[in-house]
Image (cartoon, rainbow, N blue to C red; front, side, top):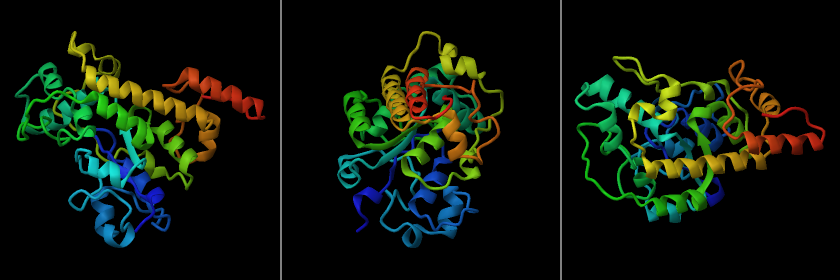
Length: 286
């Protein structure tokens, strides 16, 4: 049996970075050729789970990126070894609407009603209450339930080895390698499953603020994201992740990913990290 400290349970919330598979697959087996782009569909065809990653991943019907709900069975088997990318709820709702509705079934529901329909979906997936794709598509069941936010927050606190933020992808990938080592590959920064849609998505500013939702707020998923962001920023500070250090850890990242003035989700924490690094002779910070 693979030791617990080598196992990986990827909690893959819909529209929260399918490309994270690339990072996880190369981390799970260092002998995976660096030229292999870790798209789940392609990589697991040419490099099967049973021979390249036997016993390492939480397997979900032969896949690692399915959107299965987390149950007590998984927390027992992968205690403290959960990995996930999190996304601000209004941004995730907008992306899901464009991916599952605009691009596929057509606008049978407006964006505000859709946001209400999928509210709490990340919490319910993490709390083991509902499959991650339920309610997201017209063809999927959508039984209403009260999100168990308390359980989801507790699992986030006690079960995750790594927390990243999709809207700060480059910094998240840098943090992963600062924490777990391994080479940082250029294709870890690719968007392997971009959202296609028939009409333009909301502009980033309005999407991030959720202004297009009016007065509606997804309180349960917002509470989860807030705690995830706090954890992410705490890890950035703990591991002294600065833009200067990220440029060294991930030299293959797209140009400008770690330049001063780049988006910083953790300004206070990273400023403290930079001060700590400066005191040890390092220059600069996020």
